[in-house]
Length: 155
Image (cartoon, rainbow, N blue to C red; front, side, top):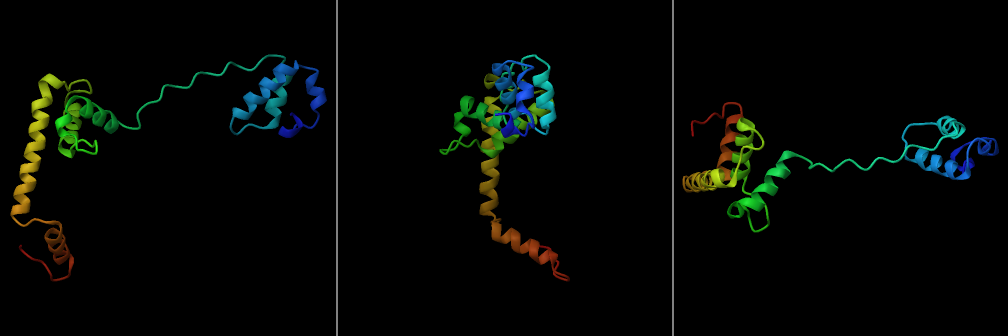
C-alpha cells in the first residue's frame, strides 16, 4: 500500500502508527492534490488520525439564470414553452427587476401580470417586424451592404 504510493521504506512508517491509521492516512493522501509522498510520511509519523472528511458543500446552481428559469417554470407556466423553456422576454423581465430591486423582489401575486405582459409585448413587436419584412435574410443583406466599401444603403 505505501510502496504503491512511492514510500521508500514502508516498514519504518508502520512503527509510528496503527495499521488502521496508515490506511486512513493513505485514503486522505489520495484525496489531496499537488502533495508529495513526504507529506504522507510526515502525517503517518505524527501518530495522529487524519481529519474527518468534511461533508460536501451544498451544491449551488450554475448561475442565476437557472434560478430564474426554475422560478418561472414553477410560478408562471403560461410563459414556458412546450419544451419547458421559459420565454426570453420573461427571463429578461425578471432578470432586470431583480437587478434593480434585489433578488427577492419578484413575487407571483404582484409581478405575474407584468411578466405575462412583457411576453405579449415582445411577441406583438416580433409579429409587427415580420409583417414589415424584417426577416433574418433582409436584415443580414442590409448589414452586408453596409459593410462593403461604397455599398452604403439608406434602406
